[in-house]
Length: 95
Image (spheres, helix red, strand yellow):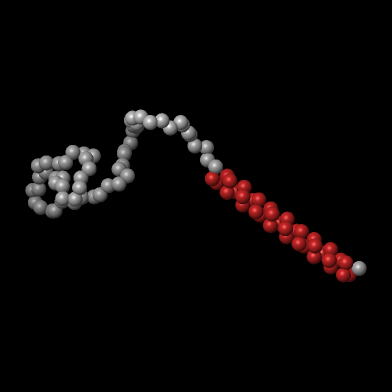
């Protein structure tokens, strides 16, 4: 009876391990499904002009910008400034 009990105990241990592993796998799968699924608004794509009108209060910041510094000179005055929002290339005069 002792060897039979050892066999039963080993099978029960194995089944418990399988049950825990399956539960862990199901939990991870369910967690990943909830992380990837988001309710995003969708619309049908069509070709045409795309105009964006932004009406808001606050500040708008450029996604990509570069700080430009002028030399420290006494009584320096700005005589001309490139138009705001205009793209510039290396070597272009901006101020």
